[in-house]
Length: 300
Ligand SMILES: Cc1cc2nc3c(=O)[nH]c(=O)nc-3n(C[C@H](O)[C@H](O)[C@H](O)COP(=O)(O)OP(=O)(O)OC[C@H]3O[C@@H](n4cnc5c(N)ncnc54)[C@H](O)[C@@H]3O)c2cc1C
Image (cartoon, rainbow, N blue to C red; front, side, top):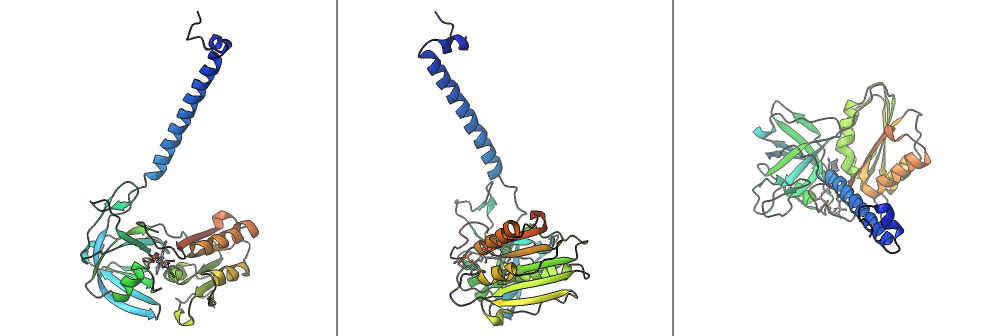
């Protein structure tokens, strides 16, 4: 008779040892799966974003034929924190009919009561004026998406909701050399950064536009030089920006901020970190949109 509690001896019995080892392996696998699930659910449960504030369109001003500035206002903007330069704000667009219905936070995304997803896009909170409670955002009219269509047709009095702000760019005031690179979607963020960078710093600004008339007058900065690159017809969004960043001269302690199409900024990351060996702590590189792919989920 073999004591079932004595594992060493069970292992000695032909056949039984295999069974015990299999059970132990099985228990170990189950333990690993449980641990993995705990980690995954910890990752999935995201921190709840700031609540939505219902606002209405006060003014609409074309910045160029491809971009419009929309000023949002309303008492719910009281206490809005514009955050650091190049921060982000979620904009909830109205469905049909045009009244804004607020979703609730379901642990890792916003959902309506019936389980459907609201239409939420990300923008840059370009300027917040606490006096008149006004928030300016600028939207690229690229002609394909819900946000772009909303910007085409928005009228004073139309309602949306905003939640923010998301993380912005922390400027190291001791640094004397910056490279800012982006496409049209990054223009509001680049303008904010130019207003905030130390005046003693040298700033290279590289911007890709689809059309030359998308160029804007940038905020004055005494150390800034700006270059605009037109995307050649038929080329992939970001091609000109990637080429510009690749051939830019960078001072040894330079800091880089870049944003634009997701695959393009991935190429910029590869160039900066793998080819140039730039320290990851010296660059912030963010994907702002995906070529050929709509923002199906609550945020991008
Ligand atoms: C932190 C952050 C800040 C941002 N700030 C701004 C901002 O200030 N102003 C701004 O306009 N955008 C900004 N964006 C980008 C903006 O959120 C996306 O462009 C958004 O996907 C547009 O939504 P849509 O409904 O118009 O198009 P979607 O439904 O997302 O996409 C529909 C189609 O349009 C294409 N598309 C989407 N965006 C662009 C674009 N910019 N140019 C060309 N084609 C596009 C897609 O590839 C897709 O084929 C920001 C993004 C992030 C993450």
